[in-house]
Length: 161
Length: 258
Image 1: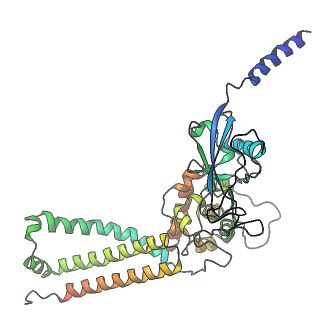
Image 2 (image 1 turned 60 degrees about the vertical axis):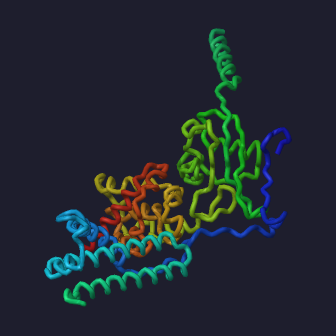
Image 3 (image 1 turned 90 degrees about the vertical axis):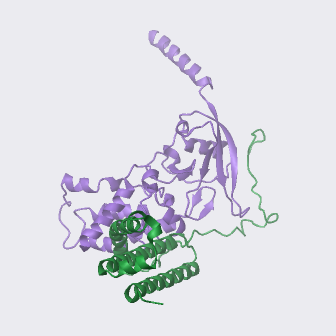
């Protein structure tokens, strides 16, 4: 630290009061989120992540056909969006082919989206508690939507009053 | 006498070239400094240096440490891109300070130098590498064979050697792992470097524990967490195609199952 150098030795100052830290009392080390140790992670020895990864790719390919076909029929062909009404839906679901189409689309889209969100939660939620709450919410919402949708497709009654 | 004249002429020209500072430029190095014994806050500190643009960032750090402020702390060993000690975040990108020339990173503007991300900072540019090396150890980066030890070396064809040649280049500098956004948020992920070193043995024809290593990387925090953002490939100072290696491990896992 010569006196003639302009920039020189830096005195780092703490924002929270002077000389709160010393060689005997250093600032705590800021650990990165979920650092790896000798004991973690526990091995699960399952193929769940492999199947999850494959499912995202395969369902994605099928969904391109299903969703684009769905949008074309609902919004573009034969009068576009203005034709959609109770009668239109009832007419379509009278045919088992469209029932199967909508059922497949519902299940694949919901599971594809849920798995994607599970990935996002795993990547971004740092605390374990945040993780489990977000995942619980996600799984509940997914199960509810899938079950309700399936119920409606199979028990739809065109003569309901 | 003639030789002496030549010598004189030569050294005079050399002296002239060396004495002039015309080739030197003023470089501002903006270093992220942190000293837990003084403060719990890190801060940016600017250093103005007279440097030859053909010098490296490591030379600039040396100049600061040796001539301006001896408290500046960073790791370096060989200083020639082999030991992998001085990976740091220079101008927002992970590089080796000893392989980055000042002229290549626009010395007109301040050059920022930070510790690599995703690992605990201990002081200035020094981070705790233990979680990184734990992931490396967890993939068993050593030759595993069955049966009796051969009486001579284990031979291998050049084609078999070529299969994993790219991943043998790794120097464990952590530039790839600490550039990975998944690793930043979740240190449980093995990270690119560990997978690269697993790849080096999985595809080695002499090794017989590929199945075990694939099983380890098939788990929750293994290769399936890779999002193929290619940050690791961009960061690697050795030019290893890291993302490609990770994808090859994924492919091996899938073809093994189906």
